[in-house]
Length: 323
Ligand code: NDP
Image 1 (cartoon, rainbow, N blue to C red):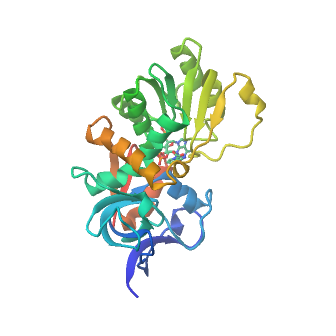
Image 2 (image 1 turned 30 degrees about the vertical axis):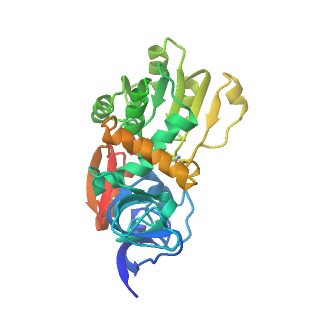
Image 3 (image 1 turned 90 degrees about the horizontal axis):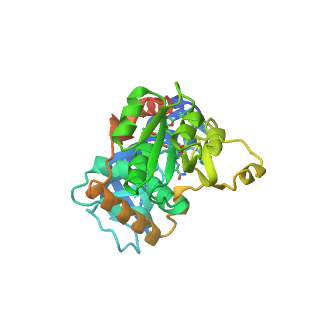
């Protein structure tokens, strides 16, 4: 049996459950692709899976995206060949090799390196589908983005601005405020020193925003709802601070607001959907309409530090692992 290095968990818990260990190297089956990883993206979903907020069957190799070179393709795969440079979404990317569905593999443009490739797909396609599918931003909209200096937040900010919105971002530090402003936010609220709702009201002539993109969850849900104008849209897409508890639907009728809770993976079920959003997002990247900020690159065996940094709100932009 051929083995490889990977980050595996036997139980859910804190960073101590992340084990750098030897596991069997995966093999292809029909319609799948075997990729030798050169770079691996770290995402908040990895923390949910490690800590048990989202269930995975154990033992599990964590990680949901990466970039590298195709080693082998399974029967029936036509769009990808051995030797292709690719980025992909799929399970178990915290490893030297990953097998994933051919439907979720994208050939990298020539000028996109592996690190950028691994940093692009999950947060990039999330940001892109949130602003084009969940609530399509219209020119002149007022948009509130929480965690605007985070990996997804910096992309949401840049793309919302590109689409012509007035962007208000929230952040926890002055340093992050500067990064969100550099990404194009028109206004940034440091929620540790200012009251978000009063600032939003003041900036929008007391009307509120057309849409809130909220990946923080429990701590921001009420403020997000209160920040909306009549007929506004609340797009809740994550739970960095914890899962939002159940609430009364009647609250939506106070201003006839709409609540959406989208997950990227349900926008990209088919190969056609995945390819369309990849083409659209990479076109923006290659044309330098969006820029991906890499916070730091860690070795695969430094994954505990990467998780601690992301969970501890110490990061701005994308964290990448190298096998
Ligand atoms: P980020 O880089 O945005 O990191 C999370 C940020 O959230 C922190 O930097 C911090 O910013 C803010 N935050 C606020 N409260 C907390 C808290 N209690 N603990 C930790 N962080 C907190 O991560 P990602 O870009 O990977 O993910 C952002 C969100 O998007 C997550 O909720 C994630 O689940 C979601 N997501 C959802 C997807 C979907 O399909 N629905 C797909 C991809 C991501 P600050 O210091 O400024 O407060």
